[in-house]
Image 1 (spheres, one colour):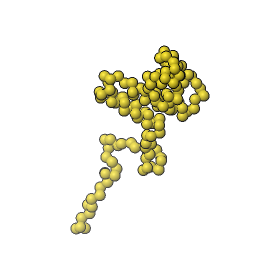
Image 2 (tube, one colour; image 1 turned 90 degrees about the vertical axis):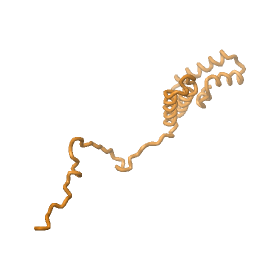
Image 3 (cartoon, one colour; image 1 turned 90 degrees about the horizontal axis):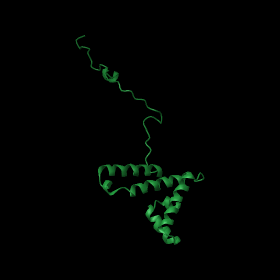
Image 4 (cartoon, one colour; image 1 turned 60 degrees about the vertical axis):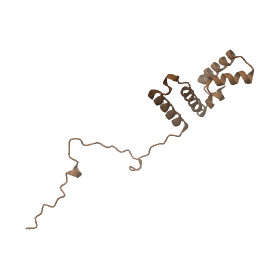
Length: 132
């Protein structure tokens, strides 16, 4: 069942598949599912990649089990988008922003509110008179 969890299979589908493959009743299949979730959380030997996949599967499950009353609302859409963003981050599909203007150095910009920018304050007009 943990492999199915990694694949992002919904709980009800895992229960149905377990009933078919292992010829067990629904209550036993649900108990197996509960044990799989419990063991998943306590097993310390799971690799980081498996944990990442499990978190992605959990997020997908959360997305698929959203209540119908929220599914088409703006708040529901925002929730789905934040879940998708987290899934992308965990999958390594997000774009890392790089500042190419500073050669990788930290740029500290301090606005100078209330003062005149020294560059703009320079008087560039030629005040010399031609009569001299």
